[in-house]
Length: 97
View (cartoon, rainbow, N blue to C red):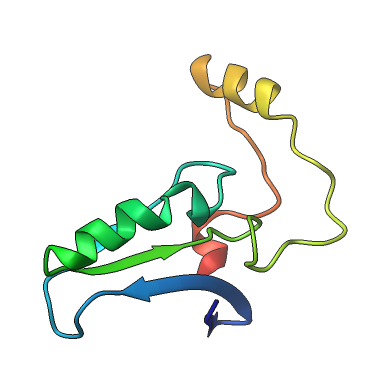
């Protein structure tokens, strides 16, 4: 898999289909690798004339992982979010810049 190095973070990605064709960006949800978008599905989109891009979010799959931070209790974080309380994670969307 190719790797994009962005601001010191490595993001693994996969592209297929004709260069210059309309692009479809497949974004997988929380904690799931890009390979959950199956090869046959991606190949079918590419065969339909699209350039298909899928990637591993940071901390997932082959992309960079934050080391040394304390693990996030996802059930507790979800509960706090539903109650309107702040959740502190190892990084924020702003730290990805």
